Image 1: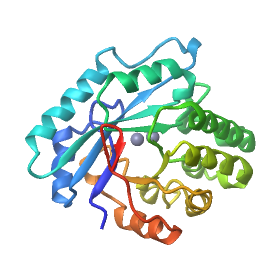
Image 2: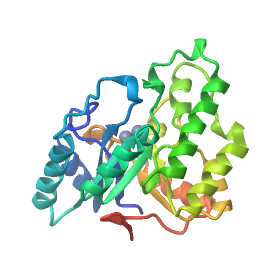
Image 3: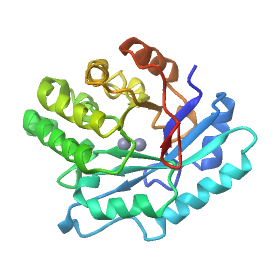
Length: 263
Ligand SMILES: [Zn+2]
Ligand SMILES: [Zn+2]
């Protein structure tokens, strides 16, 4: 049984209202032994012009984690992680942040194209095939240049399309997806199994089974599991399903991290 949750947001993230204490208490109640707090840090294009993250944002994130790590140390390890969005847009800044702070674990995600969150696209007016290709180009760049541990929710784009009644499957672009997976394998990077899709309209994990299978076929061994909970209620959700999925496609273990070292 997996007793880890490697993708969680507390109220430091702009899209969560839950205190880290409440997240930790939920984790303890659900018998988890370790959580990784991965609050958002989003990157934008040069001309975006308004970075919503204050300069002391990451100090505050670290401080929050340290307090809870100490407070719950007999019951739970509270790891300091980050979810970096679009790191390929500001690679130097991203690399600097990752070096400057004592992260245990770094997720690289792609939430936005042209500075617009994928959830705000009108899929009825969008060339979804083109959008999917641009999404994959972004992921490819992230995979090639980023300093990170795992790619977060690799096929996230299917979530927002599904919510508007459209289907986008990145696996339709098998050659490109496999190229990205090979880059991850070569660079010893992992894939995250993000269980949040199970509780959404799309009804399955990110990424889908076939992508995990291709990653294993290409020689990949590294996976983490996270609920992407933004509130206590969702902490640890879907771990059993993720466990089954990972076993089915041939992963032998789930990774943990300390100070960016896989254990
Ligand atoms: Zn995300
Ligand atoms: Zn997240």
